[in-house]
Image (tube, rainbow, N blue to C red; front, side, top):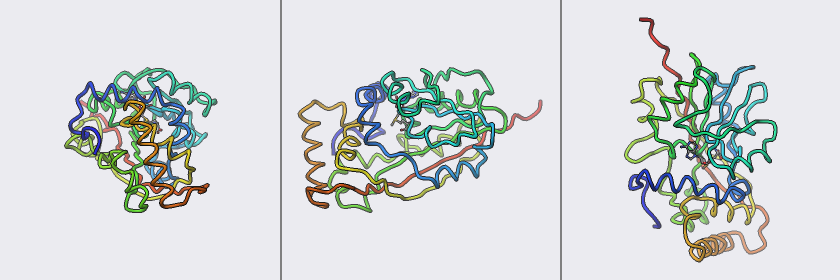
Length: 267
Ligand SMILES: C[S@@+](CC[C@H](N)C(=O)[O-])C[C@H]1O[C@@H](n2cnc3c(N)ncnc32)[C@H](O)[C@@H]1O
């Protein structure tokens, strides 16, 4: 297994790895999946997407989540890395993406009905970010989080490359605690609800290799090690699908969370 486990990462490691996304923004856009419809339906059922709602995609990256959000809402995005924002603006030109972090969200108090976080809460300083998210939410609003993780039980080629991707580090766990536990200790949010589903992202060899390259644990490795990882990945794909495969089904498990802002009790 390469690299440290999530619980062994120091704050400095976390910042360095989070910044590595800037170097691989194009690979991220090419290789990473979007999110399944059922997850969006779950948030809709939780009340996130009523007509005219203001919705923030926080840590929006290249906009993989933003582009799925319903246009009946007023959509906003925040992303700290310049290269990710550049890919975002190409992919989702109708939504403005602002520079900012989860720990300092560049919006006024009580701005949003929903703040959504795709594949990113584990990069935040969790309680600082939750307090900041609570600050920008309107009464009645809530926070949503989502993670895709490789469904390694569903495909043997994924088992072959699992240790490259540190697949054992399966958000939504941060260190010793599940994200649900982390939300539950924050007094600003009510109990978190979770929805799980499994689905397949149809991709290509180039897509799988770009996905691999965009993993922070791979992108920070020296060039020869990165190349070795990509070679082993291509070999694993060819073992299962043959060398002239065009479409590769990449199975994912998706965990979606919603937690409502706690209503202030009158003094
Ligand atoms: C795995 S990408 C997810 C991007 C996008 N949300 C998606 O669903 O594809 C993680 C993103 O979190 C951003 N990020 C890392 N630390 C952050 C922080 N403290 N505040 C806001 N964004 C952060 C990174 O710049 C990167 O774009």
